[in-house]
Length: 251
Image 1 (cartoon, helix red, strand yellow):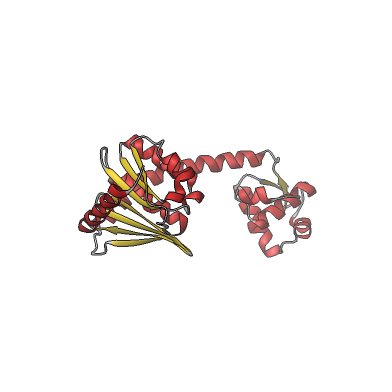
Image 2: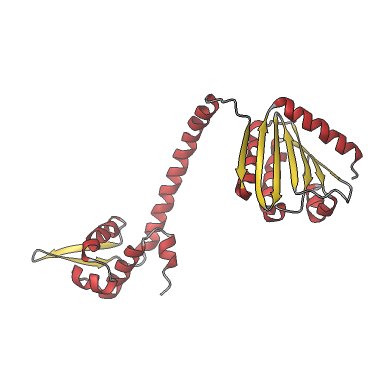
């Protein structure tokens, strides 16, 4: 029997063994459960207690002996619904707690102006920062966009840019020529977006994102990571380079 779904909804391997044993045994004492589930007697009571708290096992006492019984299998659906409701409550509590963490983070200013974000998830984390600090009418530059890792994050970037133009943030893209199809063509369809292309001989494994007081340098060569530099003078310098490249690029 395939039991992966039981693990995915939160049951441990031991709980699964005991629950399935009880499904087959019906009402029984711990002895047959230990034999059928192949768990030690020292663990079976704690497993039964956890299953009981999840509403998946009940017991009765007869002649001072406990007999255990598995709940109706439909109870698994109720257990999952209860977990989902609990997660929703946790989500709401976390949303209330995050501003406190952000305030604490912002108050702990250090002299460091650079951070490194690893792998594709790191690229997303670095990019999300733009929506936090930019406001309507601001402009960002994305320069030297290569074919990868964007081909692995197509859905994410589509969603990101939809949120960007809903917020009213402008974007100028300067793609590598070989990334014209489909990425450049798709980007040109986004509102508040302009797209140009660098000469064909320019092939890069890196790209730059320039916005507000920040420059993000993304690397995708052997290892994928982003370096986020927060410094107004540095950002202004890179923005001047971007404008120069833009002036010689083609639509």
